[in-house]
Amino acid sequence: MKIEFMSAARPIFAAVNNLTMKQSNNLIINKQGFIAFTSLLIISAITLSIIVSISLLGVSEAAASLSFKKGQEAFQIAQSCAEEALLRLRDNAAWDPNASQIPLPGLTGSCIVDIEASANDRTIDITATIPGPPEYVKKLELTAKRVGHSLNIIFWQEVE
Image (cartoon, helix red, strand yellow):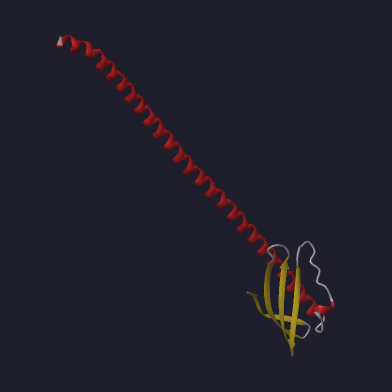
């Protein structure tokens, strides 16, 4: 009887064992799926962070490029105003920059010319401005000496 009992129990244990193997295989497949899904999420997060970093770098480079361009435009306006002021001083030693507007054809911006005179020396301060947020400003300082009907430039420098 014991033998029959054992032989009858054997199919039950086999069935339980098969069921356990199927659950084990499903568990392995589920673990592999979880690992694949987790790997996909990690790779997606890394890719997204790289894309965001590159985008922010591009925006930063564009802002720096615009700032450089506007700074160069302001410097060009300052130089144009300085040259115009020197021409007007050469033609008229008593020229007052407050009495006339310096035209800036083709340039967007304005400049302020301040002249200090002592004997034959002239110190010319130029402030060029391009409006807008942010405002771009360049300043030049010149020193010229009047000799007869001409002006000799002694000093020409961009100042902060």
